[in-house]
Every structure is written in C-alpha cells, then in structure tokens.
Amino acid sequence: MSLANASQFSPSTFFLMGIPGLEHLHTWIGIPFCSMYVVAVVGNVTILAVVRTEQSLHEPMFLFLCMLSVIYLVLSTSTVPRMLCLFWFGSHEIAFDACLTQIFFIHSFTAMESGFLAMAFDGYVAICNPLHHTTVLTHIRIAKIGVAMVLRGVVFFSPHPTLLKQLPHCRTQIIAHTYCEFMALVKLACADAGAAKGYSISMAGIFDCCDTSFITISYILILCAVFHLPSCEARLKALGTCGPHVCVILVFYSTAGFTFLTHRFGFNVPPHVHIFIANMYLLVPPSLIPLSMESGLKRSGIMF
Image 1 (cartoon, rainbow, N blue to C red):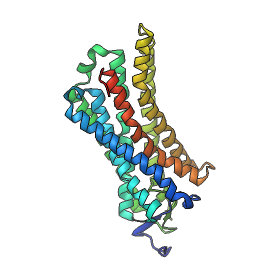
Image 2: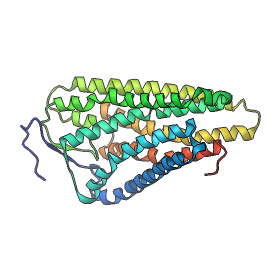
Image 3: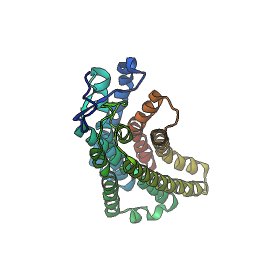
Image 4: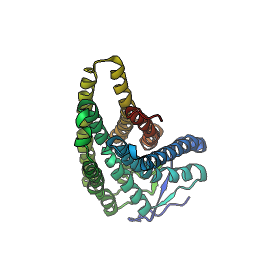
C-alpha cells in the first residue's frame, strides 16, 4: 500500500485500517458482523412490510418502529458493507468524498434516533393515559414528529463534512478505524481543529443530555404508572412491552457514550477495544428492533 506524500493537504483518498492489533482476525470478525447485518436488514425490512400490509398496525407504536427501521437500515447499510469489504477483501482505500458522505450518514442518522424519544413518549401515553392515546398521537402529529427527527439530524450534523473539508490533512492518510468517523479524521488534520472539535462536542453533549433526560423522565413516569396497576399480571405485561425498547436504549447509549468519551478525551483504552465497541452501536440496536416489534404486537393483543 503506497501512501501519498505528507505535503498533500487535500488527499483524494484515505486508508481504513480496520481494528488495530486484530488484523489477523479480520476474516473471522467479519462473520458475526455480517450475521448481525443480515438479521438487521431482514428484521427491519420485515417490520416495514408487515406494518405496510396490515392496516390494524397503523398506530403510533408501529409507525415509530417503522421510522427507526428506516433509520437503522440506512445507518447500517452506509457502514457495514464497506466494513466487510475491508475485512474479507482487504479493500482499505476509500475516497475522501465517500468518507465525508459516510460521516454525514453516521452522525445525522444517529441523531435521528430521537425516535427513541418518540417511542418513550408513546409508551408513556399508552400506559399512563391509554384512553387518550389515539387522540394525543394522531397520524398528523406522528408525521410532524418524523419530519422533526429528519430535520434535527440533517440541520445540526450536516456541518460535520463541511468542517472536515476545510481542514488540511497532511499528517497521514491512514484512518485507524473500520469506518470514517468524525473525530478520527479531525485527528489527522495538520491545523487547529478547535472549532470543529468544539462544534462536534457541543452538539453531541446537548443532544445526549436532552435525549437521556427526556427518556429517563418518561420511564420514571411509566414505572410509577405501572406499579399503580391493580394486578401483578397487568404490571408484568406492561413492563414486558417496555423491556426490548429499554434494552435497545441501553445498548445504544452505553456503546455510543463510550465511543464519544474515548475519542474526545483520550482515555487509556486499547484501540482494538475502542473500535470494536464503536462498531456495536451500529450493529446491535438495528438487530434488536424486531424485539420491540414483538412487544408492540403483544401490547396490541396480536400474535407475532
């Protein structure tokens, strides 16, 4: 592999190196990664097909699931196939513009996962105020929430590629990662990247704090309502419908938070551990969403 001269300020290509220290295991690592991707694609496409064809499922819970399914399909498809080419075929080279495009999809669609908020709100209304569920979450309001999710991701995270495009990259063209990540490219810049880092950290911090606060408050209210239900069976059923959603939230925010903190603040975490976990929030939540579909069907009294 030949790298461009270090004096090249705007390289046309970069080289993804995969998981540092585990290069000899790339072929084997690609197998579970591919399996999770197949499960995610099949599961989320199935959700979209079932909800589209079954008129009785055109209710808030399933419409929000469809939104998340589309987000996860785009998010995983924008990263995993390229990752598998690296693992199985040694395809390390990636064009700079393709790298920027991948960064846009990763960060903007991750922000669109505010669908978690919508699902938490849906769960709160369904359990705490079931008689007004359909009047509070009308199709028009659901559509507005969907548009807000898209705008939130595009407006606040589309500057990421632009900020990277303006930075000179002359240190190296090697990205020690399995995909193009914003902070990984910032670290390759040979100029002051304080503005880019500051914008990224502030956006991520604001979004994470607001999202986790809203979700936490929603589930505290849900738990309070659940434990006031008259029978133990009703309480267990209500908790069962929330379980898969909570699992997806925990997996996503724990892995994403770990990646964010490690990249920004340089904790002494081995690179292979950091990058392996960074892949998990792109792979695991999409494959868990079908569980939320099953719990939603049970809540509606439909067999899955």
